[in-house]
Each structure stands twice: as structure tokens, then as C-alpha cells.
Image 1 (cartoon, rainbow, N blue to C red):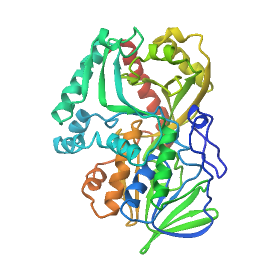
Image 2 (cartoon, rainbow, N blue to C red):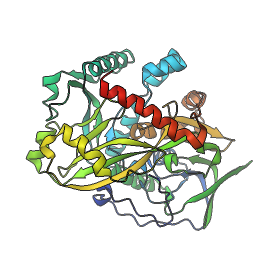
Image 3 (tube, rainbow, N blue to C red):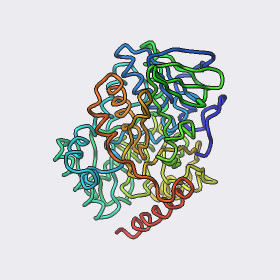
Image 4 (cartoon, one colour):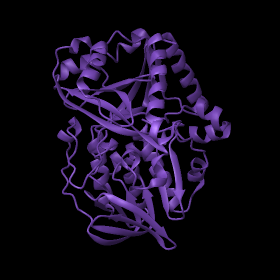
Length: 433
């Protein structure tokens, strides 16, 4: 979205905000605070790193501009999809086989972190296993078969191909040529996961300051200082995890990623029978087009349907008008169903579609640019940030050494160039080429 978190920002009016199961009383940062680690951003990346460090005895403070999970972590499609946006094949071509082998070993780790923490800390977020990639064309099916083969070569054998008749057992729609199940994927209530992780961090002695927008991050020989309008945190190390909502707080990072908005809506409650006719096995779904649709059932039997992108992070004038035709194409039986919620939110796109890890000076680390695969990627990269802080830089250095590629057109024209590119790929989707 185009909005920037402010000190009194409420949650955007999403289904997730309306159905969250933890209501927090925000604590605002006022005056000086000291910590071992200061994390900027109370989303998945920041909380993942913070929990990993707190579990090892570090004194951790998290500073959030709005409220826990206010950004992408509390608004996304709720799908635990393994892998990065850039495929293993792309990574092999771009960075070599050694890097691809390294990445292949950790593509399912982010999901594992989520499953472990949900169980360990008793997080109530409606977690359900399994996700489906849906194919519209025979060419899409060839791509899924190649993906299955590639993942198998990297030791991952959780993917099951589905033909046209088999996918009907999972999706009550006739539009798909087939698909593939990833049995190691899942879906959940994303804001309740974030709120549960915040509670887990606090149970470990961590502190979270909300409604406290960071104004700048400074460092000297002794450590880093994170400033807000009313206070500051002095720490040995700062982790910058603002992602698409960081704004210009750390100018060195602003041009590295571009905010891109995606849209979602939630129907009225459909009732168990009608909902299960849509998704009989209650798995989440995303299709394999460049501009894709994704959908799943909520715990109270709504269909949550998302898709579309707007480069630069602005909102479409009417989210329902944009998404409804796509939903009706997949599920024409829902043409008369009421839409109760519609919202938008940003993810951070890197030009290479590979997340970026790095260090600014000696005491400031960052992670961002998950490019639409942030649910699992953020948990993984948060852990890798924590490893680096603790002294194990093996995995951190591998990612930090990958070159980041600037957007064509720079900050001023990057959205226009990316939009032109998306039109080309959308045309290929429509033509089936």
C-alpha cells in the first residue's frame, strides 16, 4: 500500500484484523533503553530473529512503527509456500551449481521454523498442512513436472503431481489442467501467527515497543542506536527488518527493493458444506501464472482470495472489482456471494527475486526483498541473521555475497519498467506460451 505506518496506526480493515485472537496493549518507546540487540520491525523477519536470539539468552528489544504484524506479516495470503521467488533453476544459471546446492538444502527450513514454533509456544493460528500449485495449461504441467524433478535432485520429495481428474478431488473447479501438491506446505491465519510469535518473544524476556516509528539508525565503535521521536535504544547490534514498510529510515536500503502491493478479499461465511465443496481437502492453492491467483479457506469457512500486483505499492481504486472476476472464473458458483472484507498490502520486491541479507558497517544487519515468498523466507532469514549475530556467519555470508541488481530506471522509474515487464508476462499467461 501507499500508506506509511504512523504512531497511532490501527490495523488495516482486513479479515485477519477482525478475527485476531490476541489484543495487545501497545507499549510506546519513551526515553533511553539498552539492549544487546535492537530489531527494527515486528513482522516475521524481526520476530524470527528476535526469538532465535532470545532463546540463546540475548536481551532483545523490538521497535515497531505501528503494531505487531501491521505490515505484510499480518495481511498476506496465509500460505506457507516453500522456496524462494527465484527458482533453483534460475539460481543455478545465475550463481552456479554450488550456490544452488546450498539454497536447495534450506528451502523447506522456513516452514519447519513455523511448525516448530507453533507447537513449542502453543500458537493458535489455524495451521493446516498442504498446498497446491494449480496449472491452467499443458505447458504449466510440464513446468510443475520439471519443478518436482529438480526438487527431488536436491533431496526434497514432498511433491505429488495431479492430473485433471485428480485435482478435482482438491478443488471444486473445472478450470485447471492439473497441478501438484506440496505436502510440506501449509496455510494459517497470518496475523495470529505473528501475534503468537510476539507473545513467544515476550515469554522469553524480549520487549516490544509499538507505535514507535524509527526516525534513524546510527552506529559508532561501541554499537548501534535506534532513534524514535520519543526515545532511543542503545544496543550492541541492530537488525533492520522493515522490508516493504521501511521507507527512507535507512537510506542505503531504499533503492534495493521496491514495494509492490497485492490484494485480497474474504467472502461471507459459506458454511461447512459449501466451503468444503470448493476445497474438499482444505489445502491452500496458488496457480502457476506470472500474475497469479491464490486462495484458501478460513477457519470459519470463508474463501480468502487474492491476486494481482501494483508496482510501486499503491492501492487499486476498487479491490473487489479487481479480484471478483478472477474468483468468479475459478468458482462461478460463488457469483452471488457477499464479500465481507477487501484489503491490500505490500511486499518488497528485489530485482533478482532473491532475498537480500547484508551488513551496513560493523553493527547493523538487514534482511529484505522476499518478493512474494516472505512467509517462509522471512522466518529462515531471520534465523540466519541471528546466527550471524551469534558468530556463525557461514550461511549469512553466502547470501550476503550474492550481488544485488538495481532496478532499471532507478527509484524514479522502477515501477514503470516493472509494470511493462509484468504486461509482457501476463500476455504470455493469456496466450499460454
